[in-house]
Image 1 (spheres, rainbow over the protein chains, first blue to last red):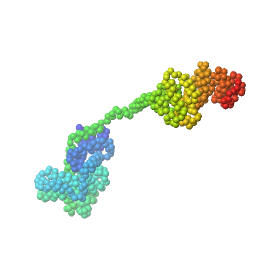
Image 2 (spheres, rainbow over the protein chains, first blue to last red):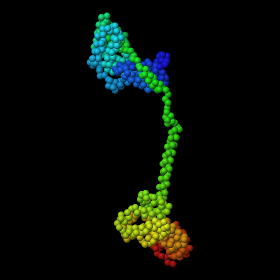
Image 3 (cartoon, chains in turn cyan, blue):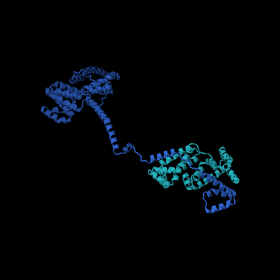
Length: 212
Length: 348
């Protein structure tokens, strides 16, 4: 990890090329840049704990190490990296029966869980004064909503809105047409809006605005 | 633009995927539609909430272990020496040669030994029974040992083998219908065996004993014609008829050399009268020896007959026979081979 500050401007693809030639420090650079993002993706994709997500993270980056010679430097590194991460998560979900059987049109489940969060938000009259607590509750609501998405919608929403990848990259990672990616993202937003609306979040926020 | 169409384009608008024309139309609709404007506001809020997610911190242990794994993978792999050597042009021929040598040392030597022992056994059997092709031996170890032991004395070993076979097997007459020749044969063999077991019995004595047996007509090799069926069955049962023609011929020739013409004549007669008849070569030699003995004893008539028989069994000897007859100043009448075939005695 020494000298990472010097190498920060090296592009991912160049760093990966160096790692292919045996430069382990380049791998450290890539690990530093992307481990947090991949861990977040894993946590939101699998809905598991951080500890468990770290195990998966380790497995994913070990695959990166083992398959380094298969990487084509012409390909964007994040596309390759998130392809491995996404496939690993999907395999994990299928293997461990973590797969959620919730669809966009299905009635929203886990009412108790969502209701409890919403209740916390609603009853918190002091949230305007406590932005930190408000943000925490909002993230919890997002997590609940993302968990409720089916995998194909969830992965597109996470890769686009959380990881900030381009539509084309997402299409490459998910091996789906560009139009499909866009429509999946649209459905994901609509679903989350329903979750937020049913939780009373928007209503409470509107009241808060009017109150202010 | 209506609300449905506007709602369907809001995410694309949010993601900046629309063209300027569509974006303008959408913005114009939203200015007069608070619901669509609110929906867009909700999406923006969700989007902001999602993008504000903090990056989780990866534990140092995980990072460290991954970094180590990368270093281990990136370092040049140390190939084990045996992997390097296994493909080398030195090790492969060396191992192959070692294996080949091992095989040669083990199988090669034992194989030669095996061949030698077999060859010796076969040789011993051939020496014991010249001219016999159907001779059989039991496979018992005891007999093999006997054969090997007696291999240095072919004539004796032949008879000992036959005796041993008779000892191990039930007597021949017990397996076939009782026949007089069998009984006599068994009776004859017993004293012969007892003779053989005495180490001081010479080969000459044995042949003489056999000759006497033949003259008495009770030797096992010559079944009586009176009972042909019994003889045939006996021949089948006693397939190996053990007769040492070469030995007897040698004996006769030795007797001739020693000047014992009478004994030589007797031995030759016995040999020539044996059944089945001896090989042609033996017959020729025997006739020659017989003729010379008769010539020495002065029995010229018998000598002429024997010479004629020699010429008959071995036409290659005809010039020699003619020369001998010329020497003996015998009339041309004696040179009629047909007469000799019919067994007529030439007159002086």
